[in-house]
Image (cartoon, rainbow, N blue to C red; front, side, top):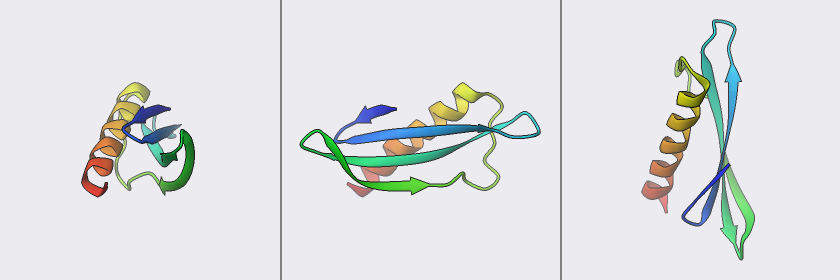
Length: 71
């Protein structure tokens, strides 16, 4: 879990049967320091990464870009 601007980004990394990884992303807005509204993103179909750390880094970067584009 990381904080970016006025949001909390949580990434759940899932191991797949073929040894690859995918992530689920949940983004919460902060109001008064507390999470309020949230946005959940399921794994992107076909987006599988070779390592757990790269999957998490990619998901966190995507979430930052999504926040910048939408808020």
